[in-house]
Amino acid sequence: MRRILFRLRELLFFFLSKLIIKKKNRWVFGSWIGEKVSDNSKWFYKYVVTNYPSLDCIYITKDISEIKMLNLKGGRAFKYGSLKSYYYILTSKVALMTHGYQDLSRIYLVGSAFKVNFWHASILIKKLKYETVKYKEQSNIKKKISRTLDKMHQHQMYIASSIEYQNSLINDFGADIRYIYLSGFPKASLFNNELSPLPYATIAHEIFKTTGFNITGKKIILYMPTYRDDSTVFSFLNMNKKQNDLITQILNKFNAVILEKNHYVDSVIRKIDTKTSKIDILNINNVKYIDIQEILFRSDMLITDYSSSYADFVLLDRPIIHYAYDYEYYKNRDKGFYRDITQFAAGSITYDFESLISEILLNLEQPQLHKNTRDLFIKRFLIYNTYNNCSNIFNEIKQRINFESKLD
Image 1 (cartoon, rainbow, N blue to C red):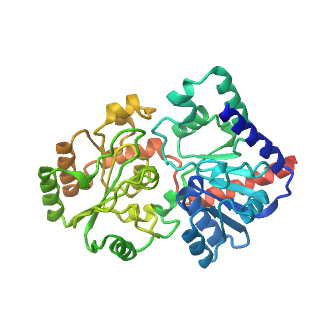
Image 2 (cartoon, helix red, strand yellow):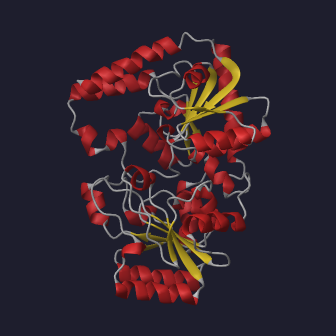
Image 3 (tube, helix red, strand yellow):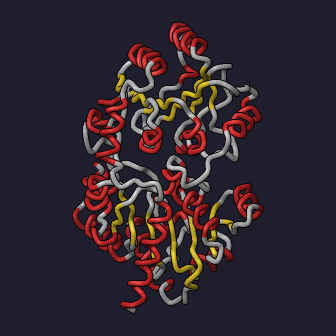
């Protein structure tokens, strides 16, 4: 009942917000339920502010330090939940989000805005929304109400990097195929040189400030696991002595360091302990002012499990290892997958620590070992990625807005 009342409240604000006159040149951006300035919304915001200064671009976030940073750099940002944020959301012609309207506000204020849903993954691996077990266990009445309300405030534009991604948006989010635009994502533009990455030295400096360890001159092996609903995430910082000795030998041989970055849900909401670091294995959850995309860009190898981060990193044509130590559990009892891991992997697949060690060594010795796998992944899942994703998306938004205006 509480869920139904919540959705009815959404519906009320949906209609009320439609009464507000929009400013055509005002665009509002949000991401991750307002918790952070990151992901596709952040990178597209950066592109638009840099290339179209005449547009009034507003970022809404709960992060005070990010608000100060954006305002210092010539942008405009306001506190999530403030009266000013409500005003700018209500009067914006375009609303751009990574998850949904709650990226901007707890109440639905974007009724008649042109709504763009970037989502935050460059490939859909884990089942979401309508495909999850929890949704399918609901009564038919609840399902019908949920789908009806979702349709009433559907986004006017979704981004899909492949036909497979498009199909997932239709099946999992109930997206109308007319509103799906086939394109690469804004955050991938960092890897395509449409946006400029930070220098290695800047990243090393910020990591030193946080951890006290200097990584200058070292190869970076980035470990980025996804979160689990109710199981433990593997950490290189919790290895036993034998495991630690094996990995230390490899890191010393190749002058490398492992940077471990947990999923946002684990690092902030679950507050995983990040105090322990070693000279060659560093947890970087608390590194400030450096976006994870920047660190990805400067990394020599990526180790992940089912996190979609590798779908950006693969564009750099560098080694990727999938450490699927709990694959069967995750597939059958946690989130579940759209397809088997062999169908969405972009590099080596390992299921135990010994195999992981072997693959780390092999990929350091032969960076092009799995190049064919990476190339095939791009052709299947990132086929619409280009060297000007942001430009293409911007032009498409403008074109669709003009088309809607003519209909009005």
